[in-house]
Length: 105
Image 1 (cartoon, rainbow, N blue to C red):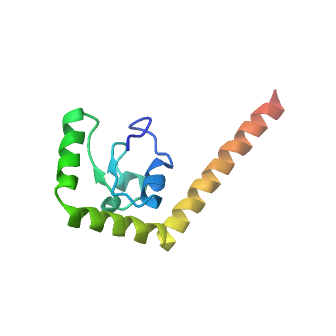
Image 2 (image 1 turned 135 degrees about the vertical axis):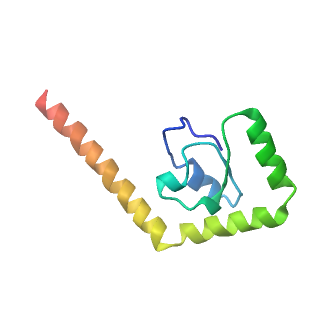
């Protein structure tokens, strides 16, 4: 799955994990976003890098299973709960900020 921007993180990765796939991820570094590296194969945005990641994953069913298991464990962990809460609070803060700006106008 490819993010909209290398600087932006969306729900796409979580959607892929929930769907039960082993994602190939193009986006900001997972570790920099507070996510475990084991939940996806990270690669750069070039077609060559994506093809190489796909070939690696397609040739290794055990790796696919390890990634799916890591994703499932993360979604069911307290770390994911904390991550969701942090993002919910950040979104709420943005909405309040937008509301306050509208009130000032």
